Image 1 (cartoon, one colour):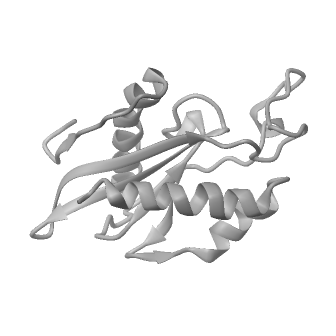
Image 2 (cartoon, one colour):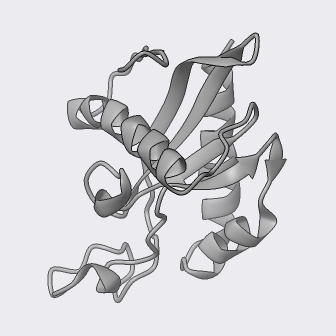
Length: 154
């Protein structure tokens, strides 16, 4: 990481997930600087798009949150997990017949899903309506992933 902190991680999952999270955070920071988006305490960003800081495929959704001390970002916490369905032309979102990324499912381009501690309901609803498993996305995956990201800062 750069002068704004370190990325501490632990996991027994896929090494590629962990190896890509620092790049995800760097992308978020670059995007926010370029687009004059303020990064505030309580913000959580979500991405799954390999062109926007995502790690591998649209089914792999990552959540990233800055950790502040005395008003300064000292580190980032991240969580990544494979979601069973993110939309697209086939259930499970992994079509071997896909010829472009738009057929694979909903793209989340490193946007805030929580802003200053408040969920962005319009984005959460958008994720839900683009999945064949909306309750699973919102509750089982979405809320649990946000909780895991928050737990890492303690």
